[in-house]
Length: 386
Image (cartoon, rainbow, N blue to C red; front, side, top):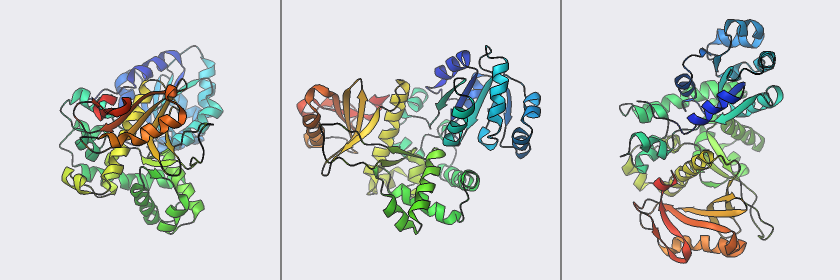
């Protein structure tokens, strides 16, 4: 079963209007499958094959003669030197759009190469795991709780017979052996896996790199470097705080989130809905899940850099969306029946920044139907974010 992605129309539009399209994202998010489904007439080559990667890096002209455009080049991060020759090939036929469709699982590396070699020639998009809205478009009976545990990886949702625990064990082994070793010289994969699990325990919390390093037994410099690797490979996302000249004593540290709640649950050894209901981490997992749905909502709206959180020394609002100078405020609560007290921080921030700047405020929860709370806020089901 194929689950359509919200990004598909934009990919098709980009291929019609730009010479190259670069699609990044973590492994197994469906980058290659999406390109091959949308552009079946393009040739396909993957640099996962060592022989292809070696030729693309060392003999790029020969490689491009063997694989002329239009072509899909998969996992291009294994041949960073190829980008300069893609530029030459594009400039030789600049009016021909959709020549090179490129995927990669290490977005920071790719962004650097794109900015240096393909500036003005390529559109760059990111593909994350499936959102709840995408899943429910094909599987309308899917519950948020089931997606929280199973995650949004397309293969898991398209084929319910796959053992999700075995999938994540294999995924982690592949990630550790391939992406981690290729991104940096990690001396101990065991230490890195402990670091990964320590990050899982901190999802939906303020990031304190010194505490994280101390708990794992590594230096702060190493922790910072490894965290950058998790970001580069699409495993974690850092959410920055929202600032205003009218607010004082606001924290400057970002919040750490895992990109996919299924991987987070696997790292926390949460294997069933019953275990999910019983774990003390359920609130953080729910907030991580809601964050993923908000990221997808903002991407679908074509907004970049619009999502933040708010915090001072005593209070926090989980998510702030800024659009045109006005703010939407969201709290993520695991409850099915939020109460007016769940909106007290929304009220506090509205008083701080000014009522005229607040476009909306809601508690995102597990209620089946939305309903008004006090002071103009709402209890909103997570399904409405789609």
